[in-house]
Image 1 (cartoon, rainbow, N blue to C red):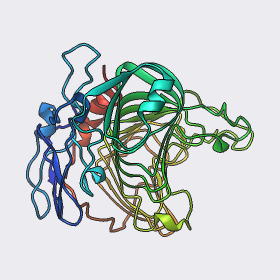
Image 2: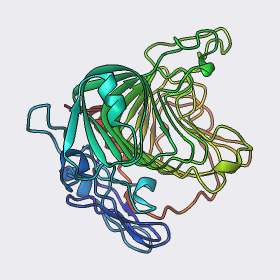
Image 3: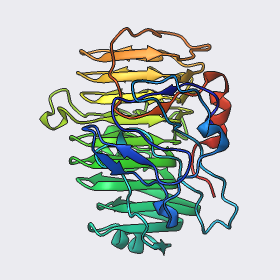
Image 4: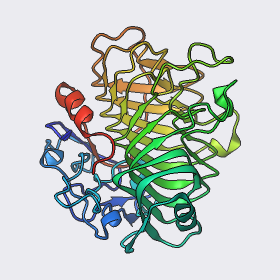
Length: 383
């Protein structure tokens, strides 16, 4: 998969063991937290592909461990989900993200049962089978995992909840049907807000959000988004936004002056793909420490890709920007450090000279020469 040869980037404290078994990640203050990635299938194993374990130990002060793969293939029928990717990034901090842990899975097939199972704070592993439509609020200590090609049409909201995993789903937003005059007045496909913490979004296909595909706001923190595809089904337009159609995929921080965001909004995006018809916000950022590494950008005809906005600190590493406009954008006191990126056939700004930040976790930088093929084959849900 996308774990080809590359250097291992070290962390100042803690790390994630990604070569199978329990993935234990040290928190930012040095306390160890169990970040077991295998909860969705009732175990503690986080299967890594053979490529995910490759790399040299040329990292930071605490060495390095491998990080990032498309997950082990599923040899069973579709009722058993594929093994999760190893948990890497900010969601492995602050004690880690385990979702429903090793609870026995509950299978749901309709919107009413899904709504009920997602409520409350009891630890649950929920397998969704089939297609459902609606707006779904996710409580704390939940793993929501798609099986057999599961799809949600509408909205997923994670507000104030902690320790949540959303995995192996196709999520299709309302595509402005909830606000035809002004897409920005509609719902995101997925929203994290209200101080949500320790959220891991893995192997999703997210498209057609009215306001955005996945927005992270209101002091949310310790978030990892991995192996996920973002797109829009058409080059839609709307009367207010015009030709851009508010095809603005990923927002981190909704306002330059939101006090809840200060010291929060720490987010990792790795092994994601911004694909057709995305105009901008890949992501657009404020305040937090945001790590963007091993991702793919192919959204030709766009306005801009990766933004460092109000007081945000970005580390942008080993991404492939292929045939896009303005790969990098720094504005409003943003701070971006970029290194190892591939800008083939791309136009506009490709430079950023900031200091970024040093992640408190370990991760592996994949070679950009093989990254595009690996991500096109590996992102999104798997049966």
